[in-house]
Amino acid sequence: MIAKVKKVLDRTLEILVMVVVAVLVIDVLWQVFTRFVLKDPSSWTEELAIFLLIWVALLGAAVALNRGAHLGIDYFVGKFNKKTRLYVEIFAFFCIACFAFCVMILGGIDLVQTILHLEQKSPALGIEMGYVYLAIPISGFFMLLYSVLAFAERLLLCLKHPEKIKTFQFQHEVLEELD
Image (cartoon, rainbow, N blue to C red; front, side, top):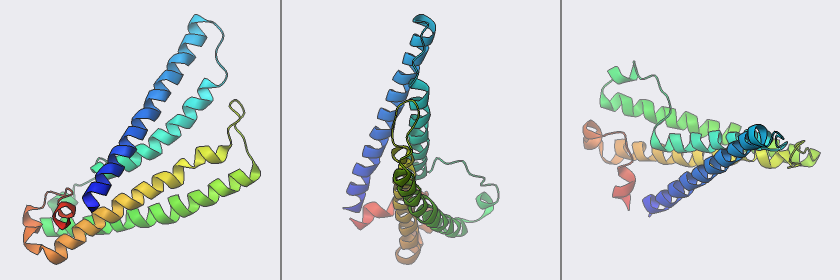
């Protein structure tokens, strides 16, 4: 059950990121067309591109966390045996979960509420800036979800299936076994 819900969330987030990237590409192409072909640059496309890049970067960071695609320096960790590496991963996902909850979710919600209360609007589009900053707590939610699932997966492996540690591929295997 957990794996199925996670799969739906994964796919939804990936589709959302693809849609935002597609809108970003169309926006930038329109900017280039109006600037160089029509010789009358559109006033709002640059601002929209900036806002879309914020959303793509933050939501893409959550997708990358889920896929294990974030840049990491594993020189020292790679020298450890699998059991020690697993413990290091458990600690790392715990730290990521704490950061996602405290900074991105709680701090992001506070930022969004403050900006919405101030009624700050973007100059060209007139969008409430709180909606732009809403990407922070939304991305934080997905990062928290993915890090808690990865943390639980690895912790369950250590507690319930210690014999599988030597063959653990550092992927999402345990969640599927729990269903």
